[in-house]
Structure formats: C-alpha cells, structure tokens
Length: 287
Image (tube, rainbow, N blue to C red; front, side):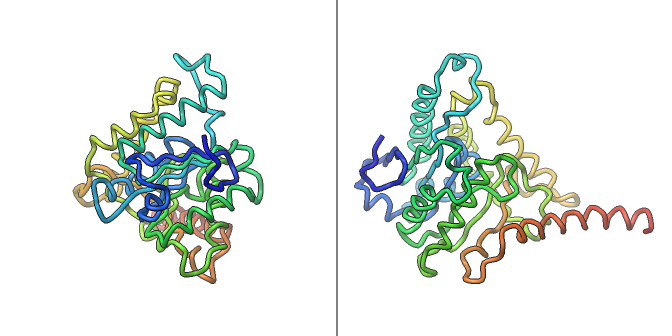
C-alpha cells in the first residue's frame, strides 16, 4: 500500500507495464470509477475493450473501497476482513494485468466512508484523478443502482467533476449497470454498448475474482448472462445485431455549467418509464 502520491485514503497504486507514474496517468483516455474490486470489469468493459492493445487509448481503473464487507463462503469462509481485503487487492491487480490497463488505483476507503453524505476525502481523491488530463470517457455506477455504496461513488464522482474547470472535465460520463440493470430506461435515453468483441477477454477478466466466485457469488455468469439478455431482448422486431450488450445512463449533462439536479434527472427518467408502461396498458384497455 502507498500514500506517497497524495491521496486522502490508503491507496494501492499499480502500473502493470511499470511505466513511471506521471507518464502512466497522462496516457489514460478512458477511466472506470467503481466502488468494489470487480465492478470495473462488470460495468466498464466498453472502455477496457476500446483500449485493449490500442496504442492510442488507455484504460485506467479506480476502485474506491477496500472490499472488506464482501460475502464469503467455501474456501474463503474463514478469511478475516483484513485477509479478504488483501486477496481482493491482488485480484484487482491481476485483472489490470489481464486487461492491460494503463494504471490501477485502489483507494481503500471503508464502505461507510463512501456512503457518508459529502464523502469529502473521496471527492478530493477523485477530483485529483480526473485532473490527470481531459478524459474522453468516464464509466461509473448509474444513479438508479440499488447498492448504497455504488450510489455513494457516483454522487462523489459527480461532485468531483463539478469542482473542475470546464475545460478539464471529461467529455463523456456514463452511469453503468451493476446492481440494477437499465432495461427499463427508455430506448432513446439508453447508451447502448456493443460488448460482443473479445468474449475470451471478458471471461478472463470476470474470472480473476476468485474470492467472489468461489466465495459464493457467481458474478462471472450473471454479468455475461445479463449482457446476452440485453442483446436478445433489446429489439423485438429485428434479428440480433450483437451477442452482448450493456446499457448506461448518459451522465454527460453533469459536465455542463447548467448541470441538472440529480434527483430531478433520475426522477424524470422514472416518470417516463411509468408513463410508457401505463400508456401501453391504456391503449389496450381503451382508457
């Protein structure tokens, strides 16, 4: 673990190819910001795939929490929180090697700190990371997720963005699926990501997290199953154009000076979903 890079928390800093810190961060074009080890591989695969063996683009990863609260059974049932944290840090490093990330940061915050209103330390760390360069795209959790720690991360990230000069803000921000899918979002509002490429890479990345898979959660199967279901059920009157799709919310309006209120933004999307459901029923029953 290292705090020499000026982060508020106890950060693990890893550059898979050994490049110097400044050069490693300067090359990052696509950044994933997730709550837990494995969130990046599940929700930000679009960025990983775009950057994989692409000399012009590099993926950077940020995991905000230490992973201590994970469920554990089987071979991990006897692990203490400290032992599990260590295992999860190593697994996330392994995924960074497999995915050839430009840099991997694990900030090591306890979940309770991320869920606190304000989360000042995390906001400061994320603002510093976002200022590395003008990022093309940032992937994070969607604000309709049902995991409180995930919500804490996306709120902190958006607060961090708002504290940057306009010219330094990311060009695109996407809120992605993890603990709630986005099938309900109106099709016109979905960011549709075709993740059909390199299925071997997706499987290898998901399989890095043995402490979760053998520890009682088959995330590796669930994530790929969701992507397959998205591809099949996205269009009802057309043949499938992709075998794996992920959906995201476009959070890019939050880089603008007149950024919308987050509650109103999500509430509006939910209202439109409600009207779509009820409208179909009304048309069929005649009222």
